Structure formats: structure tokens, C-alpha cells
Image (cartoon, rainbow, N blue to C red; front, side, top):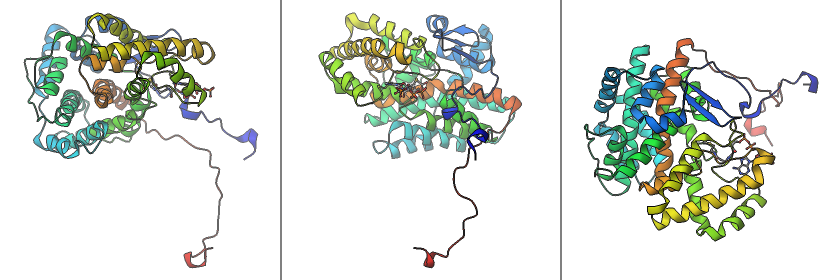
Length: 385
Ligand code: CMC
């Protein structure tokens, strides 16, 4: 193909619009984020995860009666089928929690009588069950990995409290609940990011919602996307002491390594979610553990250095994943659960996008420019060199 005839390829679909959506606005130039018109700052200061789920799925904040009904459905769906708990037990210790989560969520389809029902009403009901059960699955993975056994949900608790209760087999304290509430809300939605797009590609074939969400989990796992939270904390662990920070970052950048938790395809300003998490981390400092204080010092020194070096030249700022690790550590969460928690938090966003996209579904089927040969002659295997 002559150069002039070559179609434009947008590598990584950068700058490509795939749909119209009223779910989420990411204002990358000004570092603002809105769910259904409400800024993330307003929601994280005033709301809770169940209400944010209602907002994302239904497009408006609920009345008291609507909230009670919705919350009742979320609470009732918390329990896990024994078969799913057995899958978690079987894979525990052998697999990363993201792999266990992906398999467990996929298996949920076997226990849902409405799996094949593609009506909007059934898909909304399944969305509520998926959101509810994904947190139970993540908590159970953590519980079983820590040597415990399945803890049945407590229906008197909020979503955030119940997650921590199923994880630790004891009622959480206020700090842990506040942290989880913020983290669940901040991660709940982010427009057509890679995992949401992955969800939509699977859903656009009219595969059921369990298949679509399983695809979303697979896409989220990688360190360029959701896996960056665990990778960033592991980097802080490798740095070890705050005084090693600058030398470590310098050497990583000199070796052309990416620093996990920095940079974003859309934000060319400070990620508003990172701002909220950073402020929360700083507010914890007075009575934080020595471990959290060390991570915080390393995180703040890394941030200062990265911003000085790369914000002007490359538009690189901390993203949601950078400060998340130390905050989770303050809530007693082990690093391998960070990305699964991200997935459980993002489930309402994935479901909301599917419910919206299916109203006017179109199969995703992009093109590629073929660079191979044509009309080659088939040589029988015994005659090949
Ligand atoms: N550390 C060092 N350099 C970076 C980083 C980073 N974290 N991110 C981007 N760059 C540089 C990159 O090396 C390239 O430099 P140059 O033009 O000199 O070759 C330039 O910035 C553009 O990078 P890119 O990877 O081509 O840009 P992108 O838009 O494809 O990447 C990104 C976005 C998130 C994949 C990337 O910034 C990255 O790999 N960051 C680290 C992983 C990470 O934190 N991911 C979580 C993203 S936010 C949570 C989520 O929604 O998933």
C-alpha cells in the first residue's frame, strides 16, 4: 500500500470516541471528574457506595424510598453460593486474587436463573447482584488467603462495613470504614477506560453480562491499568526508606522504566481522585503506623520528584493508583487485594455502561492494516525446508 493510501491508525485508540454516554465526564485538562453530573469531590464527601451505585445505574440520586428498596436488593444478594466459595478455596494460594476473582465472577453465571435473559429489567437485577457479590468474593478471597473460612454477610451493615466484616471476621472501626467508603466511591466509574471498553466489546456481541464483566476484570488486571495500585505499593516497599527515594526514581527513569501510579491517557492535570486520596493519607499521619508513615514519606518524595521532572514535559501527574496503597495499608488491606477491590468498586461503572450501550447496541469491530503477504503457495509439510 502506498503511504498516501494508508489509513490513519490511532495506536491504543488514542483520541478515538466510541460512544455517546451520560454516565461520566472525565475533564482531563482541568483534572475534574463527574458521575452523572455530580463532582467526585461532592460524592466522596457526602455519599456512600450503595447510593453511588444507584446513581450510576439509574442516572439520578434516589429518594429515601428508592434507596431503601435498592439497598435491600444489594444486601440480599451478598451471600455467595457454596460452589463459588469452593472455587475460591481451590484457587487460593495458587493464583493471584485477580485470577480468582475473574474465575469466581464468571462462575456466578451458573447460579443465576436470569443469566440468559437479556431484557433491560433482568440486566439491571443482575447488575445489582454482581455488584453485591463481587465485594463478597473479594473479601472471601482475602479471608481464605489469610487462613480463615467463609464469613456469612451481616445484613445489618452497610456495603463498606460488610466488606470489611467478611474480610476480617470482625466489625470494622470507623477509620477502616471511611477509607473503604472513599475508595469504593472514587473507583466506581471512569468513562471508557480500558476495562470498561473491554466490558463493552464483550457485551456488544450480546454476550451476557457475566461474560462482559469477566472481560472487564481481565482487562483491569494489567499494571498499565488497575494493577498499578499494587505495583506502586511494591515499588514503595522496594525503596524501603524515604532517603532512598530520589536515587531509586532517578535510576528507574534513567533505565526508561515507568513509575507505576503516574501518568494517564486522559488526565494532563492532577488526577482529582489522587488529590482526594493524598489528602486523606496526609490526614491520617498523626496516628498512622510506622509502616504507613514510611510509605507516606516515600510517596510524597516520589510525587515531588516526578512532578518536578515530568509534569511540564510529559503532562505526567500522580493518578488514582499512586497514593491508594498506603491508604489501604492503613485499613489493614494486603497489597494483593488492592486491584480486586478496584474491580469490585468499578463493577457499577461497568454495569452502567452495559445497560446504556445495550439500548443502542452496535458490535465493536475495528479494522487493521494488513502488512503480511498474500496468495502464498501451500507446500506439504514433508517438502518444507
Ligand atoms: N513513568 C515514567 N514515564 C512515563 C510514565 C510513568 N508512569 N507514564 C508515561 N510516561 C512517559 C512515557 O515513557 C512516554 O515518554 P516518551 O514520550 O518520552 O517516550 C510518555 O510519557 C507517554 O507515555 P505513554 O505510555 O505512551 O502514554 P499513554 O497515554 O499510552 O499511557 C499510561 C498512559 C497510564 C499507560 C502510562 O502513563 C503508564 O504506563 N503509567 C504507569 C501505569 C499506571 O500508573 N497506570 C494506571 C493508570 S490510572 C488508573 C486507571 O484508570 O487504570
